[in-house]
Image 1 (tube, each protein chain N blue to C red):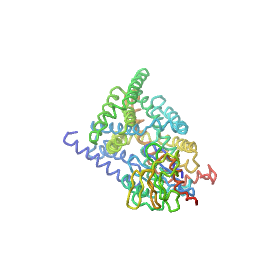
Image 2 (image 1 turned 90 degrees about the vertical axis):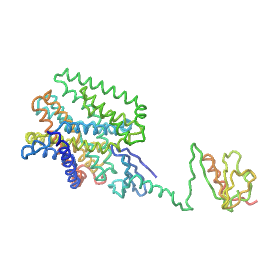
Image 3 (image 1 turned 135 degrees about the vertical axis):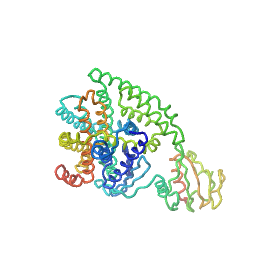
Image 4 (image 1 turned 30 degrees about the horizontal axis):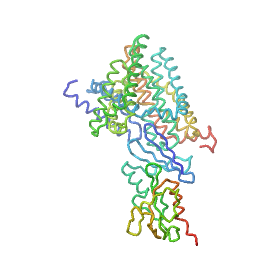
Length: 402
Length: 165
């Protein structure tokens, strides 16, 4: 790609996501599948084959996508509150433990298809983790946020966030090392790095507070990035998932007084780079491979849609909700999104290593296809929850307990 | 009146306020500063959004509701809590009050009552730091500070009518 057209290509990327984002807003759908589809259509796989010109996954776009992952996980860390987890630990842990059934089923499914541990582990993570971003947004859009069903949904998501932080450490270790010894080695390095990070986060609050204690919004943003990006980059150099590092950096920031300002100021940055990430994942996804995995996606949907519905419903019951509200929890939890895609990007980075041959690409395409289905399906189910609520009330409860 | 506070991870905080007849007002304060106010006719019903407001607008609405701009006079005021356990209160002395037409130091205010009359408002005039010899007139407003219990005991004294001698 010539340097003179680089800016134009980046401009086309932003124009494309802005355009399809508008469409998604019009029809009240999540933006994530639309960004992915825009990437697929404008990428080498479709535009490259059918048209004279296609957008490439240039190093800049790939780096932007990486920043998107870092920002997504940073926000997860910023919102992650240990006190909150402890305060509500009984219900959250019960709902979260029930939810792990999806991980188990995903693992069995992955093992059945790939006959190997590492791919099964990736499939398990991809189908397990619900989408915080889409579910939270739908809760607000539908007004459910003021109802009791918001409790178990957000509670389960918090539990999942913690699981996914540990999961990403293990998964990144697995793709880094070829042999079991190498994998264990890199997991230990990752564990050590994160331990150092946690200790620094716990001890360094005063230091961070001093660093971030500035009236200037410009300096606050720059200093936050000045800590976040180098630490994430250092982690990546050492073979630790940058996503996990960003999560822990976010946790460190969350104990400072500046957390609300950081969130307000960085939110637009997160949204920009997250859009680049979703677009990028579309660009690197070949729809032909997507067609190849269509059967696997269909199988995964057939298994994990009912299982997520079940665990979501039970989560509602753990929070003492009646059948109607528990049905809403069930429908909402089926939405998968950004985290499944982060696992997909990890699978791509592992291609050639332990995910030898086409396995990495297959898993990534599977995750993308799965998200395309589950994000649209889940959002639609939430918006049209009425019939499901009536069925749940009729068959699962008495009329008095709504 | 019950007010229940719940954390909404990733969103903000939720406040549920009982408003009688099983109905609730639900206020969601987003991390972005946006406020959403919902009405829930009963505990089983879905919350219906009443309005949403920005941080700034909410503060204006809040201070109007609080009575910062207009406060009907007949309202039972509740005084002001000062730091510590001290309460600042003010009372009108009615014509029937046993404090009327007597000096503050006339022994009606019990010795063990640790209440300080810091000022008396009489018409447009303010008598600051009144002494034991200051005579209270009916229509006066006494501004007092003291502990919650002592101030309440003082309120009874102000309200109690003079005993016919």
